[in-house]
Picture (tube, rainbow over the protein chains, first blue to last red):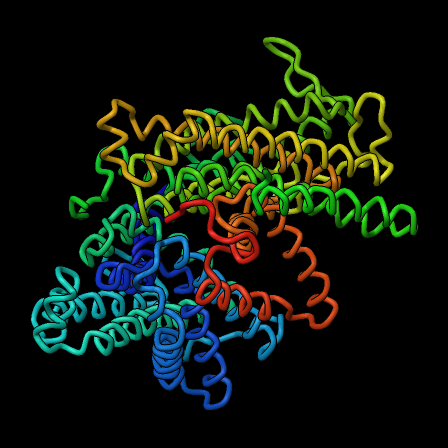
Length: 306
Length: 328
């Protein structure tokens, strides 16, 4: 196995990790600020992907499709927050789990009703397709490189938003003490809607970006949602930095494990069983990583003491 | 003097027995199968209810145990039907088509899994616990998909239902009775567990962890034991469910299954002894009524669930029998 192959897989892992970050950032913000566990976050990812596929089908513009995914997911997020989620902040986690599970059923079946069971396809635009040559002789798809770039830009913007802007101060204050900032005259319910819509928009963007690599179908958000949970558990709930580190760790572990574990077992086993044992172990690798992190730090790498 | 809830429970147990017997008299075999499904899914819910209702442990990974029970049946029965031993060296282990042995294996295997998953997950609490149980459940799901020896993603079929000494398990009513008797035994066990010193300590750990620690008990140990018992019961239900369908697949391990088991418990009422029975019955009825009405019945299920969470707390048993169990 060559250096080039390894570097390519590292880039793949990075691309996967960056995409997971877009999902995990919203989840962790919503949990950190509102104390809500949102299983329906994967549904917003799906909404973004379907909106993008529909708009791309109508207009042919990938850029418009991305804008549509952001807008549709943010709108869906805001509507859901006002209609349902708002009533759940004071409830226990069990009620939140059940209500957001119900939302998944409604979103999934609703999407199936509107778009049918067959997957839609979202094409990578011409100006982003094809490989580019990187230093060191690596040929890598431009589109995947673009995803990494978009993800990193979003991450930087998010850090800036949280650390440097007025909204960010309010969000951090909301995490620390919600009564106090309400007493200081911040419209807390508007802030909550805003945070939820922001998280939803990021999930929708992730859905649209990935939709162009994979197919756009009902239920596409759920595997990603669970990976995003793993990311948050590893990174620490409520921490954006933890979400970024966790996402990259999970992305790299999963991608590299799937490629190299079967080869590793191939060194001392016969090829057929090496492939199956390696693949089985690779599918469990990130959960083993999560278990290890938990053993050392039960509240995640960047989690607080609570 | 019977309390209102006890009277209701006796009526529910009688109704679950009466419906398939009536169906037998009217030659409606399909209804017997539905009632069997209700009894088995209720059993899975009774298992979860021990962790969730008494212990307050919101486990979103009980599909793991349900699926392990299912695969215990699938693996043992597949080897028995192909006359291939499971293990030849260092000692011989053969498959079996005897239900009691399969149940025992299912219970032991899922209890062991619950011990490992519980020992790791119970180091955390609250929303971490939910996410971690969910993640471990999903780990087994992906493992089952990539494990090609027993069908991988397609699952493992069994040609003939497994046997129980002295009974014809292929006869729907006899198989129903097996499931029903197991459900009743486990319900009695669960009721006694809730009133035992262990059950009281577990409930106390849910309500006030500090006080339990003050009297010298360790909440972690109480919860771990509860989680193991809970997983073992759900595993037994999984073995029965796989036998009912004569089929096991990774779907049994998927997190939708975890969500559904939780839905049974909550529709009926968290911490209520017969909550899962009511919940499973209502769920199966809805599936058939709404399913006949629209292909997209899960939208209506989702709306109903949402309305229940937002407005009707305490579940159906709570609505009928009033608030007797203190549960927060």
